[in-house]
Amino acid sequence: MEVGGPGLPPEPGVLVFSMRQALATSKETKEHTMHFAKPTTAHAAASLALASFGLMTAAAVSAKEVTVWAWDPNFNIAIMKDAAARYTAKHPDATFKIVDMSKADLEQKLQTTLASGVTKSLPDIVLVEDYNAQKYLRSFPTSFEPMSGKVDYAGFAKYKVDLMTVNGKVYGLPFDSGVTGMYYRKDLLAKAGFSEKDMENITWDRYIEIGTKVMAVTGKKMLGIDPNDNGLIRVMMQSAGRWYFDKDGKLDIKGNPALKAAMEVQGKLFKSGIVKPVTNWAEYVGAVNKGDVASITTGVWITGAVKSEKSQAGLWAVAPTPSLNVPGAVHASNLGGSSWYVLSGGKEKAMAVDFLNEIFAKDTDFYQSILISRGAVGTLMSSRAGKAYSDADLFFGGAQVWLRFSDWLAKVPSVNYGMFTYEGDAAVSAQLPALNQGVPVDQLLDKIQAQLAAQIK
Image (cartoon, rainbow, N blue to C red; front, side, top):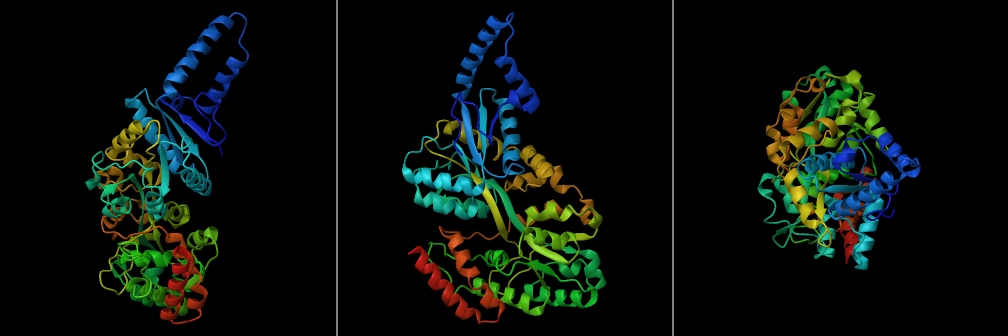
């Protein structure tokens, strides 16, 4: 998808956003275009003058137009539109062109353009998934604007800042979090004799014991897992402060106690019979909404999907993520998340930095707004002092759910995602069938090490 340049009509998927347009519906915009297409004779001269003035205005405005690339119209794009509206309210000389494309298209276009060295078509701001941040920052070290000294990063969750830091310089502006928690059905757990207190700060081994009894009493599985997906293994591994790579970026597979323990837990989960196998997102969420499973442990972004089944209001609670039995493991982890980065070659990079700093690094009211409207948990820690975070959630029995997640957010261990997280995922996923058949984990770690080493050498 090509991006329309200044003065050209936006192409499909391109949102040109300003204060004026924030007040106009799409219908109104269409009608305005028709007036220019068919001017009356009496108003032809005036229309021509207005059109000329409009072109001049557009040219002046386009000189301060900040272009943003992102994906997901209902989350990232919508939130960026809210942020742009807040900024332009105080800076009427600024406009934003927000380009919506698929995540795959964005990443391919960003990679291809950076590799070509001809970067004039790149935006001022781009959304980058956290798992890929180090790949871009290290592969194209001069392409992203360092923001150390311009942004106060002390106010953000440390693990988010660490993943965008290279050689002591911090790039990007931390955005949403995938802080994890355990969602569980209070009614099903109560039938099996477990209280909310029993679900606090448990280990995965205890989780399996509880799940076994829940299934025996209620007939319900404890959780749904795609047998070919290693997302839960990543959650467990990061909760112990380890990843596929160590802090220096070297492979950390054989001899990684967190990865070994995580794979052993996943093997035990399937062997215990408390897992409902699912094969896609619809089945994963469907198992929750249909009442087929008693719990789900994943990123906070699942909250909206859990709450979408209104008949289950009041039946759910949240508890900290179960921990591994390895040194340093905590009851907090992360799954997913992304951040905003400024391209150093961007025409309006100064305004882009100022915009991100003013809205995403300082405006706590903005974070209340996007939590309510989009369920977005930001990583600016001062946001938790706002009312939206402390409000009781009746779906969860009146618990302060968002405040709990913000507590866990501060405890997520920092890890080095490195440049090849998805290659690591592929190597682990290739061994999951063998894991579920009972092959010893040490043998599987040898194969994961060999495959990943061959891919990244």
